Length: 619
Image (cartoon, rainbow, N blue to C red; front, side, top):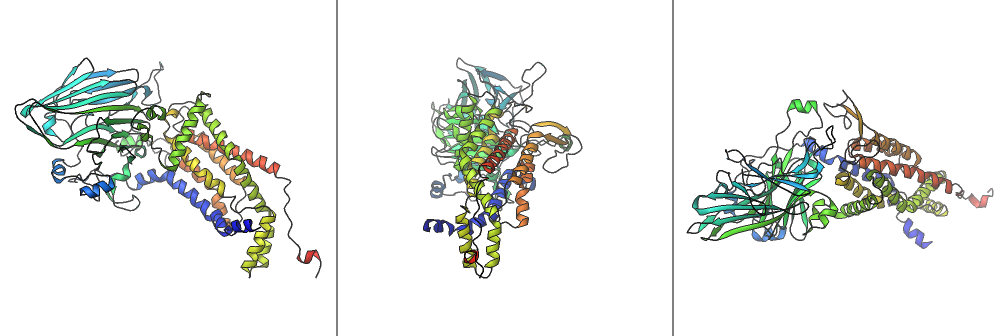
């Protein structure tokens, strides 16, 4: 008895959780889904601010503060040597020469303009899930192809680039780019292709003269991340850097200074990170990443946010799926100025990963390149575990669609006892509502007595006020982890399932022209896509809501809001990946089955009738 009272003492809190907490959780998740599209619509990315400095306001300006924050202070002499954030260009005018290195996984193209890596094509991945009439891939997925400068070229450093024209040649090991500059400086870059998605690069600055020369601050570009095509939005782009202990993810939010919750404020053109501890840097889009690992940690890294040429108004009107404001993230490593004695050289060596964001591949590479998957925090923990389980199931089931169904069944099976107990408790709560209402009416002037009688009735009928919301709270991290995992899993890219041609994209059956103006559903210039899985998800969610008894503590307006909340989820997820809506639809169907079985097993549950005054005798 005492034990039950100790739990029941918190029953008002649980009632409030039923009424408000569930609504807050649902609305919070809806905001999470719509956050980036809403942010981009209300506050589109602005062009770089002319004359902006390299130091982001609010960052550390002294070594002590830099050590505390993990961000290096920028010495005034170095900051002055770096220009404002204007997209860089090469002054080379001679015809471009290119050389190619390749292995079984990639094809790397090097250029004489800038003497660096122009782009990498990935042989196993098409740029778009489309093939020509012969079944051949139309275009290969690539990295660094939309860059302003080739990788491993010096930006904002005329003393090390000159006119930007390098002499490109084949060597026994790979490709070499050489540039002789005034004062006896020679820049030599060697490139080689290793196995899988790995390349090797070495950048050497030689003093071939007879006296010491001053080498300026080096801003060595190591990669540029851009959308894979014009339809990819910027909410899945960004840059990473790793300091040997943890990784940091730089996205659009880090380039907006001030404002409230990233709304408003000023667009900053660049962010500097590191304090002699840049172990690696990376740029990425939704499915692919370019990671540069220097042989020794770099001093700092600078990430610049450059606007790409936007589509014209006519193009936007013709295809509403186009990204109206495409961006590119360029990462460069900063090395300090120094004096180089005659006959000596400075050299930086790099290992480069240019390939898919595939966890199994990245987890085999050091130092912890799998952190680019962004599996951090509680939801990241679940996302990582779910991805590993999904791939394990796929070893036995060749279809990723059926693998998603299988893992959904397994997860629902694990939570079955908890959900069944919750369903039974909610149904019992609904059944005793007449008794609870009678108690409330009888003791409306005596709250203490009303609470005592309410707890007595609930105990007699084995009703736990916490049972309604506890399963949702426990399953929420798993669901959010599933959301992020399926949203970015490259394993689903191009995977077919029944009528679905690509599980990473909406399962559009056909498009109704002229309805592109519909909010959330329509696409301007295209029309209304008919995506079957989100429709099935919405229908099964509505049916499931009709089977679930509402919390008795909710007022009618709140009950209606919860009843039709599936409609809002359907709107938000209508144009998301079909893998996600497949998971949710299957989960709904299993939950419906579970409710039916629980109702059958619980049909003989006896609700204790209300006690009659004076043992049932007439006074």
